[in-house]
Amino acid sequence: MDKLKTFVRTGDAPAVAKRVTELLEDGQEAEAILKEALIPAMDEVGDLFQKGEYFLPEMLIAARAMKQGIAVLRPKLVAEGVEPVAKVVIGTVKGDLHDIGKNLVGMALEGAGFEVIDLGVDVPGDKFVAAIKEHEPVALGISALLTTTMTAMKDIIAVIVEAGARDGVKIMVGGAPLTQAYADEIGADYYSETPTAGKEFVKGLIE
Amino acid sequence: MFLAIGERLNATRKSVAKALGKRDAAFVRDEIDKQISGGASIIDLNGGTSPDQEPGNLAWLANTAAAHCDVPICVDSANPEVIEAAIEAFLKVRKASAPDAFEIQPGLPWLMINSITADKECYEVLLPLVKKYNCAVVAMCLGAGGADAGVDARITSGTDLVARMISDGVGVERIFIDPLVMPLGVDGQNATATASVIKELKRRYPGLRAACGLSNISLGLPARSLLNRTFLAMLIGAGLDAAIMDTSDAGMMRSLWAALALNGKDDYCADFIKAFRQGTLTK
Image 1: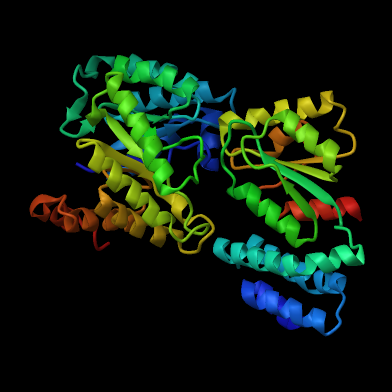
Image 2 (image 1 turned 180 degrees about the vertical axis):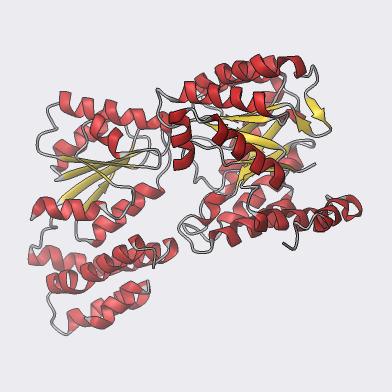
């Protein structure tokens, strides 16, 4: 298991896939491989990135390596009846095509064991509403990079409230032009400057 | 002439946002002086703290800059609606010296708008302003595929935008195409992609100039200043004509002078030697 963690941390995707296969052959349970190796290793990578010790490409290849491992595990996880910890829906607001920050948030959340439903960029309010109703996520993450598109967050939250979909879900917002004051003003539940901090908030929700 | 567009008066910087809140003109004047003495030929002004504050901020910045110096400004907003008021605020002070010609010296436009896109709401507001004010404009290679679209998609959207502006009566010499800079940390080909877009669009439209920001290239990587200035040298090799950059960064400016000389854009290495005599290459 320690070897597997090292392969995730160094972003060696082929080695991760191979090691997961070996562990399964040795009789390890898929759930244990996921929760005792893949998730802790990726969680650590997210923390190192947030501390500035890991850099963007290192975070990206580690996330890719973890994905490879999960791909090998998935049939076994389904067979063992293992459910993801919880679901999170993320997306960039309508009118905005930036996705790097949002993708980092998604990677950190996946790394922490959540199932992430990524709606992509240029997402209108009704699409967020539909995703909340379909997936029943514990949290919804909305991203915007421009001062001109950040106002769309307010409209999206209004659409969610109007559709009666606000109560069961916590809303996280992020993006370069945002501030805590703006997040409060539009009625968001959580804001962070760093893309990987959101996972701590979501972890807190399910404890 | 290469245009170094000073980027420091941008509301996403906390010190600038604070100065905007207090209408601290001394701060703005000091930032302008610092950038000009570093080598800026144009000062970029961005007032985007929040949507309701931005129009007032930008107009105040333009007005303050006009009152303080003769250097052209680059009116920078993602919201096309706020640009005209800022230009008017600038002209209130600078009107007496506003030129009838597009350039105040060869290669240097009197005013720049940053930036126009093919998006209907943006294009229809800004194109008439470029004509009305006889100014330069940054045009972004931004199509439906978004900012991280590949080289071919960006070349296509850039070509379409330039062709449309020319047919709507904007001279090619007024257009600075922005190839869009995506972080190298996300894709190791992103720096070469930027260079390819610049080369191809300038090949298609002789007389077209290219401009972009630099710092996005190094997002999420260490030693950002080193990457930014080496990227600048690389893009000058690809034909970059202007950059939105920190002209108070001495290392960056040294790379600029050296890259211009090495790429045949500094006759007799005159500017390079001048910079050496002033001590800016070695201090």
